[in-house]
Image 1 (cartoon, rainbow, N blue to C red):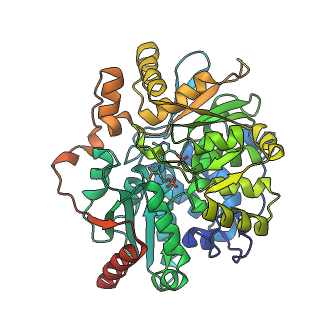
Image 2 (tube, rainbow, N blue to C red; image 1 turned 30 degrees about the horizontal axis):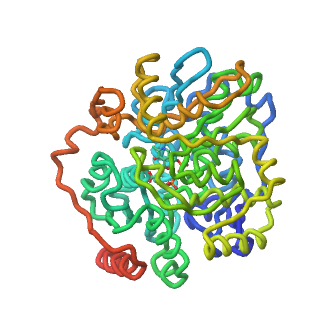
Image 3 (cartoon, rainbow, N blue to C red; image 1 turned 60 degrees about the horizontal axis):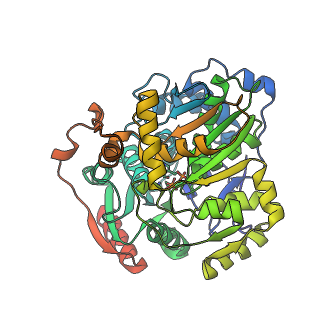
Length: 466
Ligand SMILES: Cc1ncc(COP(=O)(O)O)c(C=O)c1O
Ligand SMILES: N[C@@H](CCOP(=O)(O)O)C(=O)O
C-alpha cells in the first residue's frame, strides 16, 4: 500500500515511510492511495476475534509489505496487552439502543492509547532497521500528550517534544505528562491555545532545513498510522453488535476530526455504518461546516471538555480531499486560501455528499452536564465531559430506532474530576494505574507561542542529547 499527500506534490511513501514522516513535505496529510475493501464474509469472519487479532485483520492491508503478518501480530499483542480490560475496548449497554464503547482502558485513560501504544512499537520496530534518531514534535490539548509520552518515554532512538496550552488542560492531564522525567521527554507549556500549538507544530515541519536536520516525526492524528489504528475499534464494536448483517451508528465527540475520520475510513472499507454523528462542544467549526457549509475559524472558548477545544481540525482536510475527487492541486490551493482567510465555504453539493454519512450537533455546557446526569441516573454510568457530548448528540439525533447507536467513550471520568463532580455530585476515583500522580515531581518549560522560541528549545535539547 502506498500513501499520497492530500496536497499532491510530496513523494508517495509506503506504510513505514508515512509512519516515520508523520506529515507530508508539502504540508499535506498522508492518505492511502485507495481504500482497501472487506467483503461481507470477511467482516463476518471477524466475529469472536480478540481485539489484537481484529487489529491484525484490519491493519494488514494498510501495512502492506512494511511488516510481516507475524510481526504485526506481535506488535498488536504487545500494545493491547497493556490494557486493563480483557476486551481492550468493551461495549457497555445504556438502554435498548444506546451503547458506550469504552476506549479508556489503556495506560493514560483516554482513547489515544489505542493508537499510540501501537505507534510507539511501530517507531521502535522501524527505527531498529535504520541508523536514525527521531525527533517527535506534538501538540496536545491534554490526551495525545500523555498517551504519546507513555508510549515513547525511555525509547532509545526517539526524543519527544510535546506542546500543551498552559493552564488549559486538566490537572490530571498535565501531571500525566509533566511527571514523566525520562531524559527523552520534553514538555513545553506554551502561552497560547491548542490551535497555536498545532499551528507551531505544522510550521516546524514546514521548515525543511530544521525538519531534515532533526528527522521530525508526528504523534498527532496527522500521522496516518494513528488513524489506521483507530479504525480497528469501529470494526470490533460493529461486529459485536451484528455487522455486517446489521448497520450501526456512531456518535463521536470531535475536535481534530481524527477519530470520526477513522469511522469514515471504516465505512469506505465496507463496514455498514448507518451514520457518523459529529458531536462538537461550543467550539463548533465542524458543526457549522457540516450543517451550513461555513468552515471558518471562530474565537476558541475554554470549556469543561478541554481536549475538544479546537477550531482548526487537521483531519477535515482528509475528508475534503476525498470529496474533491482526490485532486491534490485543488486541495493545496484550498488550504492556502484557508490559511490566508481562515475561511472556506463548502458548496451545497459537497455538503449533500457529506450528509449521506455524517450528521452533526453542537452541545453546550448545559446539555453536556445533563447528559452526564442522565447517564448516572438512568444507567448508573459516570461518564466524562467529552463522552457526555457524544452521548448528548446521540440522544438528540433522529435515526431509525432499530439501529444501535454507539457513543465513543473517549476518556475516563477521573481525568476530569471537577467537571464530573459539578454535573453529577460524584467525584470519580483515580484508577490504581495512575496512583501517586499528585505526589510526583513535575518538569516542564514555559515558552511563548513563537516558532523561533520553540525551534531554539528543540535544537538545544536535541543537541545536548546527541
Ligand atoms: C477525550 C477526547 N475526546 C474527544 C477528542 C476529539 O477527538 P478528535 O480530535 O480525534 O476529533 C479528544 C481529542 O482529540 C479527546 O482527547
Ligand atoms: N484532543 C487532542 C488534540 C490533538 O488531537 P490529535 O488526535 O490530532 O492528536 C489531545 O487531547 O491532545
